[in-house]
Image (cartoon, rainbow, N blue to C red; front, side):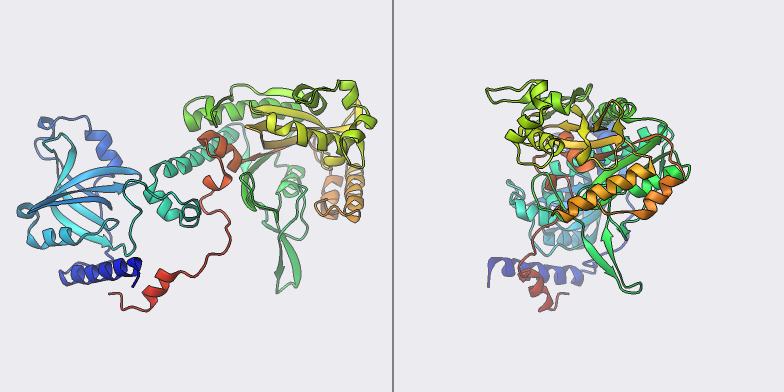
Length: 501
């Protein structure tokens, strides 16, 4: 028998002993008077004298430590990332409940009733008079001093990661603050939150490969959305002039520290503005979200200080010149020269070549929060052209820590031009570009009813959370990232073969 099987057998035996004492191994509702955080906030600074007369409490949590000393013992309960010590004495709790305390394993969940006091060492504790057993843990917790360190196990068993590593819980609390801040800021500016379809008959709004599924009743293929853009702009046509969605998107692409096939975006659209209006709005949103999430507009990421109080701004051409590291730094005239671009890229058109050079030579150098604007028309089929230079569109992307975290543009609202752009994308698909847009006839029809001038933007919640929490991988900020299938669950199979309780 393996050590894990032996430990499982021991815990199953203790569960039966607990049941024999009259306790349910998987108990019922427990009404506590305070959370552990509330007790620590309210009483951590009080002296032993200030805890008299008795302050009675009922608290619950997971047992994280336990020390037996004859007819008494100490333990720590953990709840919502906070820990509080309890003291159990046989004379106070009674023989039955002290026997229960002796049978407890690290990881068991209990509720206790008693009063607050300070031990001889000064630690705030609960002097326990009653114990209720709430849930048995059959598998052992991670080792006390090292926690849960294996990365694969942490991602696959996030529930265990949250128990063992308090800093992980802080990451996801910060993520919640980021979402709440963005939602609050947009609603304060008159935006309304909407929901659009996740299953779509046509995919669009981004250049990406979709996931395909099938609806049996209608006998049609559907696509998990790669972006909600075309539906949100239909709403702008319909008169919802400031809309946003915090949405799940799905792209059938590779895995990396910056990519997960399922990810979260904030996407918003505003009538009667353009990409420059959204640049200013983005600067306000990102500065405030950094403050709301971390307490400061400056954050540290991989040893560098990032300042979200301002966003540097460069055109794509200016960025290539500014951040080019090879000895032969180009001029703006060079970057505008199709021959120079062809020498540095194998792409078919000057616009595609410029984008390729930028992505290879500049992106990873954009450490401080930065806006890159004015993109080639070939790579931006839904953006409005610059009137003074129709080879470029009014589009910008936001970078920080070498990652793209946002994409925005002045929306193309000319239905005839939109049709021509879709046709350009279809030609690219026929040329082998599997990520090019499909033709969406209904979207063109919607534009034909008239969409006001508008700007739209998407901000990646996962990557923004990475930066604001100092996380190196996107998997660290997604509760349940996509992983390869796991092998046989031997311990689970062991449970199937045993009379558990």
